[in-house]
View 1 (cartoon, rainbow, N blue to C red):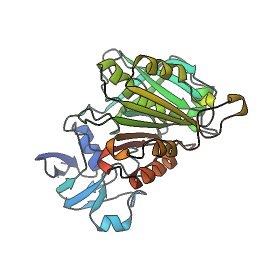
View 2: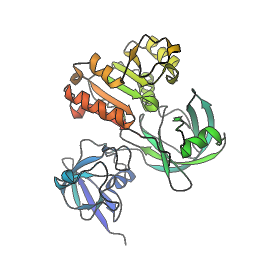
View 3: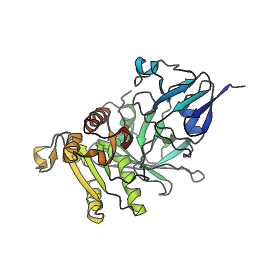
Length: 338
């Protein structure tokens, strides 16, 4: 019989069980408890919490996002931590009820280029299955050799059986190369999800600043479309940072939002505009534009989605301007060529 360990979430009275050898985060997700998390690979630090009682181990070694000093102070990275005893843990926030993480086959329904290096891929869920998620979450595409590729859902839930992904072509990328060169409509893939704790906190009274870098626009698009569908009047300030104008691959859609919904403002930011862009708007790094336009950032909730350098720079800048950790939500992703 597999040994189990009881894991109690401090201050809530809630608990769940983890099998021997099972990561704390995996055990929570499989039992419908959404602990904060992002990459699930030990890199982003989103699942960092405190170990108040008990002992954990890291079978693959100390994760990148956990220093020896933090571990000595009782910090733990729950995506990689495996319980050796019963535990009491403290996490910044969690949802007691989450959507079941499922492993499903899906069929490619659509492959359409949105610009020179971003593909819209639509995946169809089997008719007899239900795939529920929170707008902003992501899924993993499971490759035949055991590797995974993570992509955010770009459409809100409740839109039938189709899931939209925005996939950027990474030069030399093992999977994205297939997406652009060899995969075809009706091909079958396998996914696991929903994953991630990037979703809109609708219980907050504050206006929201949403900052996307590149295809980090995908989950923010899903969140905004869900807010629009719900009739929300919460003020939203959207910033999208890309290299050149052609990388604003859904500009007409956003302009349509802005025209119809006065509570939504939009600022595109180009880091390297082409001469042919004849760009008159904001330039530079998107987080610096946000910091300049919102010196009183502590009055807002901030949502960030993009590559790790953007996330880290934005977190540092906005924290220096007084943004509390509890008002910052982010999804940090990287591109793999392996």
